[in-house]
Image (tube, rainbow, N blue to C red; front, side, top):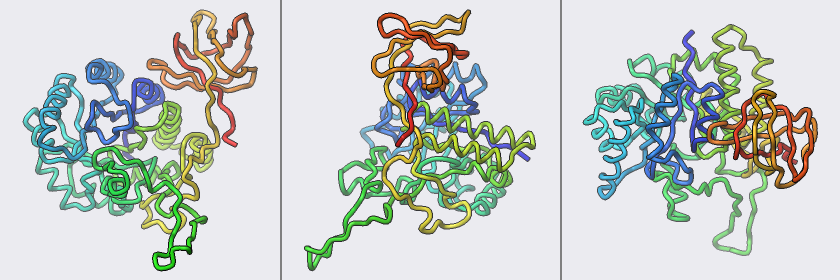
Length: 394
């Protein structure tokens, strides 16, 4: 059985380190303004060459997202970014606009067709294959059988989403945000009005209102496939993609690690229900809107909708302090506490551009003058890394 490569999201350098540390085979990231995540920092253009070299040194591929709709006055910006991608030797550009596709072809940059293109059948797949695409990211509204059929019809690589937020509309084609706030989903600016609570008002008798209490009618649960990776692998797909370029480093670390563990177990023949249950418990600790199977077994019914617009994560983090030193010989970290207290048995996240996101259970803590504590950390930490206490969400 072919095991799909694991593709993780990156929003900044800390999340890049988190994805790398936890087993991603490839990462996708935005650079500059045209990357479908206007609210996420992305990687600075001046840092792209260094990031690509760092990834390639670890055998990890870099895919750059340039998948918004673009306009004539932005073509110079597009060309400059593609010239940078060529110079940096990125492994592919994820795009949908035909102009961007042509500009990539002109520069001999590998093309991955974005899910924004909504590829839902074999004929569409073959069309993009003739355009020279190396990989297609399928629409999220497909069953396992449909995915397998498309994969069998093409020699291109095929990528599907395996975890993360689901859009109420065809991915990226929703205009609700555009109508309500002037922020277009097709430009990476969606402010997610679908996640809010609404009231229904009788137009003819406007004193009659009904607030919807039984769920958020426009807000789907998040996709989770940790229990069905064997069936996904059987379709022959090449990449399993984690959604979440707007998520925190601990989210990217936790989700990447869970799917890396599961995929490795599938390869080793140790993929069991018990393992998946344990990994699901880990996934519940970070941002989620509860989980569903998405469209993989057919169109979801009422069970596919969340009952809350807020995260249902079982844990949250509180600002604690900053790492001031790390003594490698003794594996001891020094922490300056800005707020709160820390005790043996507590768990913390430590996050930084090179450290990524590390979860540590505090042991052998010692208090010193000036709100300074030291504790054992088998993982190397770095000065200026931020520390957060992990606490129950409720």
